[in-house]
Amino acid sequence: MTLEQAQKALPLKGYLDMPTPKSEELIQEINRLRKEKNAVILAHYYQTGDIQDIADFLGDSLQLARAAQNTEADMILFCGVHFMAEAAKILNPTKKVVLPDLLAGCSLADACSGEGLREFRAKHPGSVVVTYINCDAGTKAESDYIVTSSNAKQIISQIPEDEKIIFAPDKNLGTYLSKVTGREMILWDGVCIVHEAFSFERIAQQLMENPNAKLIAHPESEAAILDMAEFVGSTSALLSYVEKDEANTFIVATEEGILHEMRKRAPSKHLIPAFPEDETCACSECFYMKRNTMEKLYLALKYEQPEILMDEALRKQALIPIERMLEMSKNIK
Ligand code: 13P
Ligand code: SF4
Image (cartoon, rainbow, N blue to C red; front, side, top):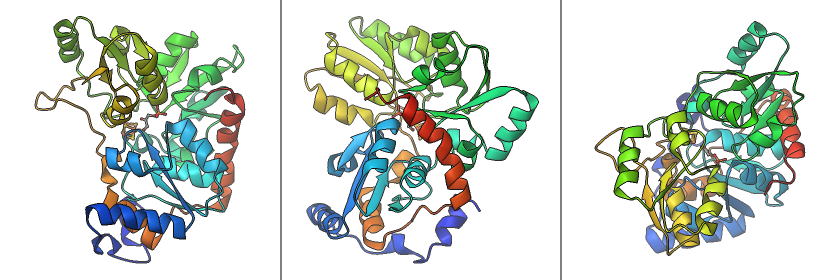
């Protein structure tokens, strides 16, 4: 079943067309409902500013997975993309997990199926499979280790030197990790459509026009961009860097949603979104992340759908490499 078919099959059809309160009242109703239902709102840094502001917890993929695992709330309203909400359900199955829009997918998750990964592994016998958390439960279930952008380097350096490594599904992140860990890796050919679209030429031009600026980039970007960057890191690492570094101007090569929290944490710094290849654009938005809106968030809380549901055998299998990841990166904040 595609995500679209899944959405149509929801118990309350057409709930997305139900009326929603306007502006201030919308926020009041969300606050009332989350209290009434003992729900926690988790949000990723790529969500719109209004969603980030209303969240109980804002974080990167690793921090959000931990927050989902540890919450005592009855309902998790996950404002991020499908694989994140699914990871929350895998880690905390007794909670009701809802995602404002079931079509909030991810190009990386779409690039690699569990079946495809099983066949790929069979072509490279004796390899261990390290998979980026940006994948669905079926793909996780075929993996030995799950990693996020904030713990991947640390986890890979704990894998014995003589093990051959398959890395899926992000070839840009894999190329970067291979470089920083010195480990050879067999790479799956997937990309993040947002980070893949950054333009080397346009960013080089931005750097020339802003000689005091530092380029900072997420490791889902292509090698040429990362080589040009002063600092490479996960969303949370990019935020800390901007906050602590002495520079005043940064060119930021990641999804534009992060600028909202960056401006809050470092109000005196000048932040310039890195240019994508599309010359009509001055910033980079993830079309999937931006499917979630405050109205859909309200509807998800009110109608408690779309809910993330999963086969229990699959959940248990997918949990193994996620728990391994959490155990191997306990010291990372
Ligand atoms: P992190 O927040 O873990 O760096 O992940 C970035 C991302 O692309 C999420 O989709
Ligand atoms: Fe996926 Fe890229 Fe969007 Fe993150 S920014 S959800 S990796 S498509």
